[in-house]
Length: 113
Length: 116
Image (cartoon, rainbow over all chains, first blue to last red; front, side, top):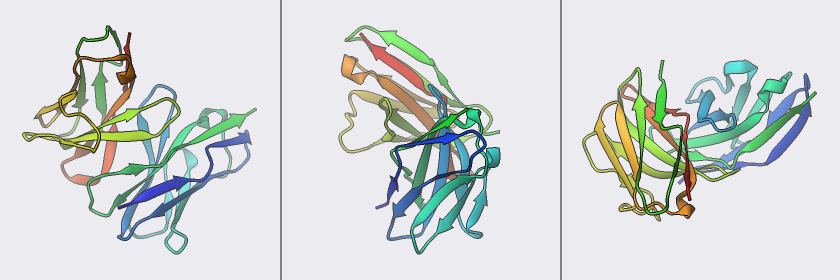
């Protein structure tokens, strides 16, 4: 079985500052990793995903994440955030080729002016 | 591409009534759809996996008779909350997987259910 831990429940940051949202996972098999963003009262939007290959994954809205197998991490980064990035971010994991996706508890990114 | 819609976006009903929520993949075929429940400021909890033409697979602790799921076609799955009670109030989100893309789920916008 897989599990995922998002280490920060809330991350406040000033506009134009860099941000990192942390995610660690556990699994006994190869995994796929995902980051989703959720705006209030909306569904989830895929930011990026890691399936295989290059460990640095670039996504939409200037976000990127790096898969680190030795540290079982998949942290999300953005070099300069905007007010509009304020949202809930979910890290998720599934077994490679598997069926279910397990979601982390979420990290609330709050960008301040 | 890969747009998923849900209807209604919000619904208020009286205790004891049943509510049906539709999940549609608008521009792709989805052999598998998932239904999640999300409580305020919490993560998504998988309720069931819906496969076209077969019975849904429910997660442990989810009442099959309470949450009826039907996946009648490759583009439509429905969740019916039967005899709804206030504790069923929640945000329900569906997702779908494209036939040729089994690694990624595309999410609907969610349905806010409030049971009075």
